[in-house]
Image 1 (spheres, rainbow, N blue to C red):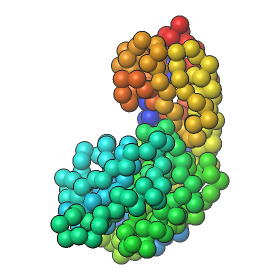
Image 2: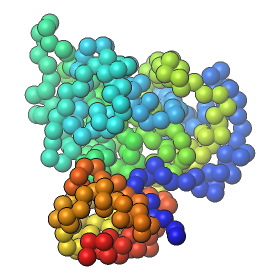
Image 3: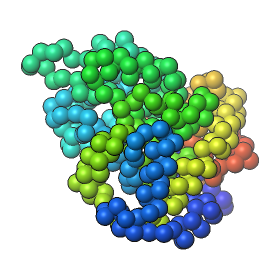
Length: 343
């Protein structure tokens, strides 16, 4: 039985072109800065984001942690949205390694506005932990792939900079956001002090993420990458796949968004399932199954038995992601299986 995997866009397999590029990659020792494929990937990423430099890191979580630690001092606070990935799914690394505290802002749709952020900035009193950083997430994973506009991001960055507070973007799926908005990633992220984005999600590479920023920031990030155990040797075999992910895969992300809409509209017509298709902006959809009488764990088990993989994010809500390895036909089949379970 073939399996339709809607758990995440992290499950994508490298394309045939990626595999060929990996087998032919020219490599060297990246710790000595001698891997030509890695060097070229970093150059391309910096150019695409119109930044001075970039750094290839093994994971997005490591990339986020490096940026958080570089922007802050131990004992400071980081303002972020309550459902953000950095806060909830990166094993408290910001506290354990960077030594900073999260100041979480709960929102209805995953998008913080400046007035909410301003209220959370700590007063300049010596016995208060000071605000060291603001973290944004675009698209916002657990808010159902919601997209923050260029104006929303720019307004927050410019207001923060007036108060000498840096802004980091967890842009794991920033190419999805740019695709939805019809913007370049450079324009969308221009005012952020640092950006992390993933090559291994919707862009389809098997491994890897990137940090972009100033040359000085990336030089410091390279030191932290080594400290965290992320010094890599002949890693050009992975960077080769990342190059194809970076330069060729963003243009097809609209297909994933269309398939997510297909799923959302189909689910909205299923009795006992609640979802607003208008809320689905990119490749992530979250829907409520509480009226089915099943927990998400039970629902996932029944889906798996019929060849569909999906996870719950709590007892009532399921999450599904479309990606390169899921076709529109797969989405149609998944809908029929869901209907059979609910009915």
